[in-house]
Length: 224
Image (cartoon, rainbow, N blue to C red; front, side, top):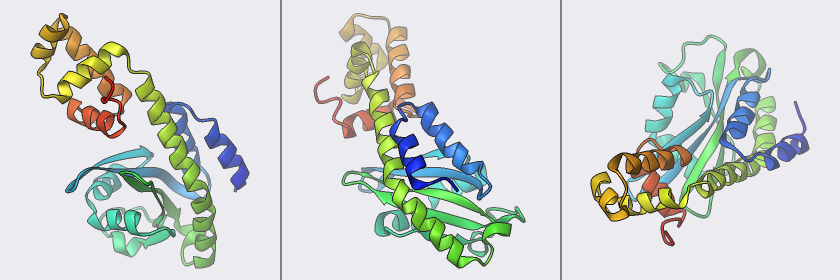
């Protein structure tokens, strides 16, 4: 196992999404875990959250993570690592080497909360509660630096949005269609869609509504 200092120093140098993803994947490729990931919940409305995932989260787990109300409660209400044994995940994984999940929660003072998630190897952690507890506290020291890197990467990506892209997303936030924006800015509708697509990509969103929500929550549209 690498030292805490090693991971913290590496996280402090992460500047891009690719570097962040690589860090999470490296953790998942160690001998300690079957895979690792990061799950982030961003509250958009009182009844809706946007879920993003990094790392090697399998598709079956991805669906469960996005839809589990209990997991959201855990990530908001707990500051200590949580273990979910495989018997509580029946139907999610049929891997005989899978022992369960280790969740290491974090939360911000704003609208985000989530956790690092580790798939435990049966041969290493099956029934070994002492080792699991030590591992949980090890990563609970590191998880604030992981979230800090996550925020830095996001801020860098938003900062790379051009003035014209920000103008397009700003008008879109006011309910304007691509055609209406093209007339306002005196550019083609195709160009508007190109700029909006860039905003979606740079903010790690799946559509323009999500990109608008991210920019609004970060205050980037206030001065657009």
